[in-house]
Amino acid sequence: MRHGCRKGAGWWCGRVKGQGYKLTISRQAILEVLSKTSKHLSAEEIYNDVYKIYPGAGLATVYRTLELLVELGLVHKFDFGDGRARYELIEGPEGKKHHHHLICTKCGKIIDYTDFIEDEVELLKKIEKGLSEKYNFNINDHLIQFTGLCEKCRR
Amino acid sequence: MRHGCRKGAGWWCGRVKGQGYKLTISRQAILEVLSKTSKHLSAEEIYNDVYKIYPGAGLATVYRTLELLVELGLVHKFDFGDGRARYELIEGPEGKKHHHHLICTKCGKIIDYTDFIEDEVELLKKIEKGLSEKYNFNINDHLIQFTGLCEKCRR
DNA sequence: TCCTAAATGAGAATGATTATCATTCTCATT
DNA sequence: AATGAGAATGATAATCATTCTCATTTAGGA
Image (cartoon, rainbow over all chains, first blue to last red; front, side, top):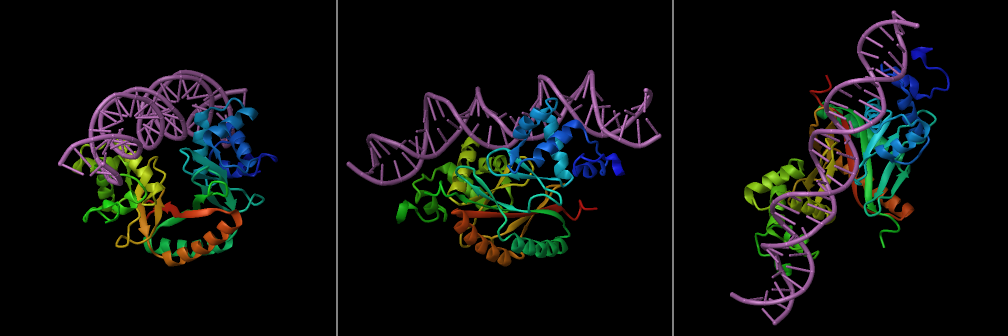
């Protein structure tokens, strides 16, 4: 089969090998961890979780792999204002829905919301089209987030 | 006058003193610098510019002041992916228009765009209302940005 | 199985941001 | 204009997420 991805290797196998990158044990473990959580993990948190299934991976490799996955468009990198980057797998066909974030600036709570996503995406498409024409930009991605105080912190 | 802001002190005087904070020379110099640029300065760049008009200010004070100004809602803090935070004054009544950003992931070029802002703001209002009701969030701010490749880098 | 470039791990290095603390300054009150 | 209390400061050290270095290992096509 294409790129020598044996079955059970994960849907991402082709996405990685297809671009000429090797699918190493570390990379598989990192993708495994990302695919099994709905949290917004930091590099170190990912490193800790990876350690449980493959203790051989180093923190530097986690950073390098995350950078690669962002480049390949498999992972989103976020800054929620707590001083460390956070990562989320952009799921494949079977995965979770496209969503945006609501961030509490006091306690750091993150809510994934899918409400209004259709409206948002529709507008975003229109804007992307307009901007890419006007500024000759090749737009790949967008970011929308709301910040404020959550139920507990607003009191 | 209220809060003892003498004329020529800058429109921000009341916004700072009104919240019980002192308007020190360092803070004034920082606001001065921010109000005279349309760039997206990092803390160190601000520090360098401040040095020219008031060499007494320290880098730590620049960081502390920026944090305060963000809290007061006078400044926006951005992460454009180059490893340092960037700051922009949210202008007063006479200031520049509300805008969002277009970021080149290769060369780091930032374009401020105001196209479609009416549409965006309209939708954002609707979403803010919906989300704050559903999740009991007190939404203060939003962030929209597009990432991609600029004219030069897309080739 | 072999070969080669890609990828790795361990730890050092980097660099932005934050904490510390003795001193200075702001400003409401006198 | 002088005062005093507490906020704010500057210099520097400390922190800590991220990146770099380099000798070694690995993936995967031949």
